[in-house]
Image 1 (cartoon, rainbow, N blue to C red):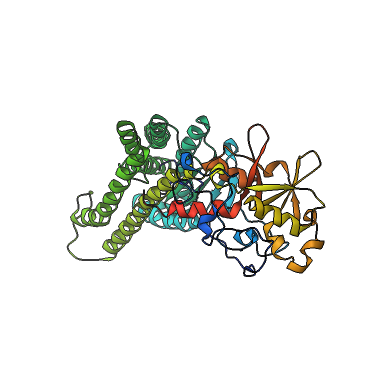
Image 2 (cartoon, rainbow, N blue to C red):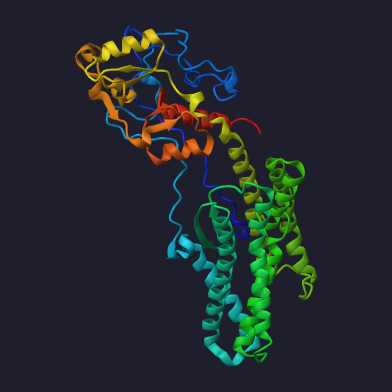
Length: 478
């Protein structure tokens, strides 16, 4: 169980944004008052390395006029809405479901029990109850109550394992979204990655360490009770189960804790976190294949302490099914770890300064047609409404411009199409990567005012441009 859980995958809290469909009217090439722009939506960004998201040293600054390609209105370059009054949709991570039944908030982190837990609890109750029938036949039907208690106690141990990851993450100032107990263990959803390989190693190791400590505690308690009694059987089961959890999670492959420890070691040696992720992920995939083939073979051959089986029976089928589920979880988790690492690797390519559009200031009572004429003349693609002192007041929404017919534009003031600038809509030109996405998610809008550290207007950032650049960056090979 790594910091994302015993058999779960690590979740950084950052995921690929979905592309939004656009239902806006088609551009009218005959409008002479429409600011011009390039044909390809990807080319609407200020180029940095030829594709809009690369080296800023070769950038054309936002104040430099753009080449005139056609008479397409800049209003048609947004994907943030479907017309006037549409709800802004900035790029964001897909919202996770709540995760099941809320059990509490230790250390301020919500703990959920997924519906799948009840299935595994019933399975543990049935299997452990059968074992109790052989050890303590005098219990009768009450053995299932004892088995249910064991299932709850075992998952309480899993929760302690996850809380170890959570406390370590909070100690390193890494936010934890939630803990979820589910079918195969638990998941601690840590939203950011450890900054150093040393912290990564500690963050991964504390989970198995706590499981080993719990196993030792149950062993000590077992020495104090009579063997062959209900407390003795329960303590023995909890000791063995926590030992298995610790050993299994120390296996050196993602998404297990041992895989994250291996990643930290390779990261320390190479100085590259991505190299560590690739190595640990491929070891994890090899581990998945080993579990798929090796676990049924070990159980059937009697190497795990049971009698060798010559024929294929129900136990053999169940062992093969369990091996397949475990292998699928490990394989999928390793692949997701690679995907999330690639996402983090490309996030720095999203820079507010690189994606900002050139803007022109206009007074509130300026007719829309005149404002668009000025934008065309300056090679700009955004309008900022300012007062007489030049202080920004609002941003003219591109989606709103689309809804104004050409013959009405001389009679419509830009102030009627603008959205007031709130504090959250002011974005620093220096923001990039995760910080930029967090800023946009905090205040959903279609456009943001980008300012320099001095407060000077740099331009306007379209949420659609950020999302487009995000998708393009994720499509690149690592």
